[in-house]
Length: 156
Image (cartoon, rainbow, N blue to C red; front, side, top):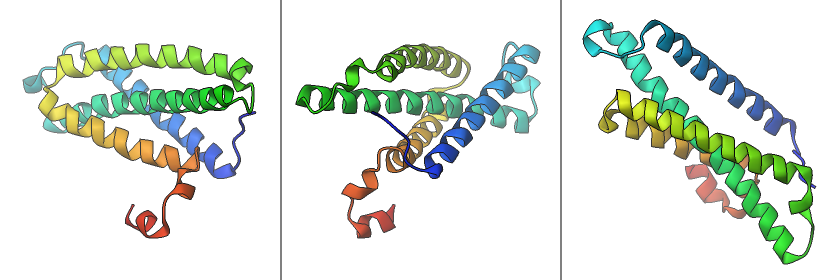
């Protein structure tokens, strides 16, 4: 059965959802006031903040869907290896449902982000966010640091 083994994982999970909620609520409030983003109508600070938040939120959703795929991959491996029957566990079915919802959210934020801003502005922020969060997620939740040599961990 899956279980979170440390308080560090729970703290990271809580912080992650707080950041996701904050970025989504900030964008929702902004979209209510400004349905169209016109660079000339906004202050440079506001425009830069919104230009950062859209790809940041997209990256958060992409990282969350990556984690769901990683969980499903691990469960499938254990089930097909014959060592456990984790795929029949209710958490596996919940994870599949969450993955579908995450893919819908990724599609919505892909449309919102790239319809409002140039890919040259958003793509680096989005993928930097995904790369950093995937590494952190892998180290905290999936204990992938155990498979890496100490010298390489120091470089990370």
